[in-house]
Image (cartoon, rainbow over all chains, first blue to last red; front, side):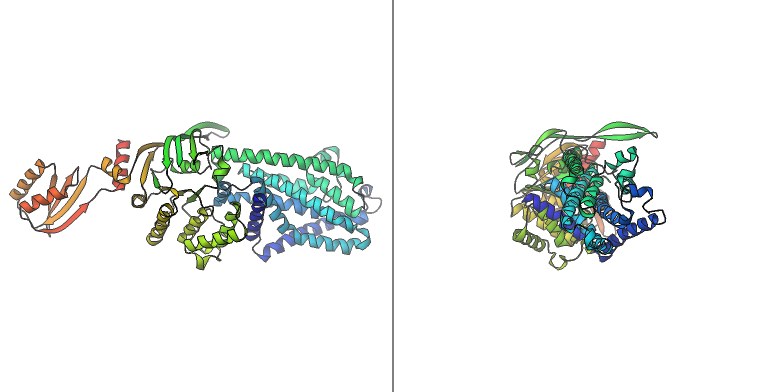
Length: 270
Length: 327
């Protein structure tokens, strides 16, 4: 009960604090839409026919579906990098220390923070994506029955990813370098705009660091390519492995972060 | 009872030595403090800036772990049982931070209340009661960014009481507040100890506040306790200068000389200053000289125009201690 209470507290606060204006929702809608449109028209001038090199990896006619699913996943993951970044605000205002003054479950706090920011940041773009899937893909090209499972995989993965990022930002006030490290590489290497299979080996190695890579493989396989879950067991196993590792690291780092803060008093430094 | 035994806190700080080099240095913020707080008691923690007050408070509130020594709160170890004790303690700091400015006062309290495991009707009732206690009913639905300094501080007090703590640590709670608001806060603090039996630890730079509120006072300097007693005993021990200033009719020099002679036999020191209003007598002694001095005046049949007694205060004691320390 205390766990749910803690998560709920953080989710409600995130809503009240970070999403207090309609303009924020508008920006959270227009920004990914613009990203998606920019990527689509950046690829358009190239040869996307059946003889193009890209045709080896996916049907160029499905480019828009590929990008839509790619950006949907990206926005889920990226919104959590932003929310983790805002932890520095909590340091500056001293509220982070007050949260750690309470007996709330620390895991509930980091996952509540991730979940709260996630739902608020992505729901509008998710609606847009689903609508676009209907318009672009048509009712027949999409496996609609797989959509709920795809969203569950996306949400669970993103929340675990977000929880991990939150802990990293708790641990260090200088964690904002993650913002730089994760922004462009994740967008490029996780297979948002280009299929991972098209990358050279070193590119694939980087791609498989990001759980988003496997999430996109699952979503595209389930929703666009109509694959059954058993056909996707390999990326699913990898995804579970990476998420378990992130979860484990979250617990370890969280304990270390609080212990470190108790020893150094760094939770109020910013 | 809260009991801290020989607690120390040492930080390791890195000091720049050129572009790439960093040298680690040990900073001993607290060097072995013994301290107790009984339920229903207000205890003061005084010291100059950098004395170790905030570090001590943070150790007592489980935010920092002591480098050595033990802290037990009602029999529970503050390091081993930290999560349990967080339900029993709370801390309120002065200043305008530690609140979510975009949230209303009520939303702030509801957030922190949930972190203490409150929900539903219990949460609503607790939040409403605390808002009433700190008289913020009219502003409860306004964003905190619209609050005045005093309103923010009152909201902080309410936040600090959400978990109904047995022990409350107040770090400069009236910092920068207007006199009426500070008085109101002092009254709340007094009630918390007297009526709700909470143990309160108070740090403040306003020494009159400490003198008014505290049953006992710890004076710390450079991480160690210099003195620990009731405010009255500290004053009596440290301050040896009692002063009485009296204005009478103009006196001639022979008369002054006679009085000085009489006074010296009674361990009083008297200095005279002639002003337009008459002669000002400034009497100093290592004890309260009022009675002895009045006897002298009556013997010499001098009418008193003005009488001012300067009783020593805690501030004088602190200044005296600081002076002795630096000497």
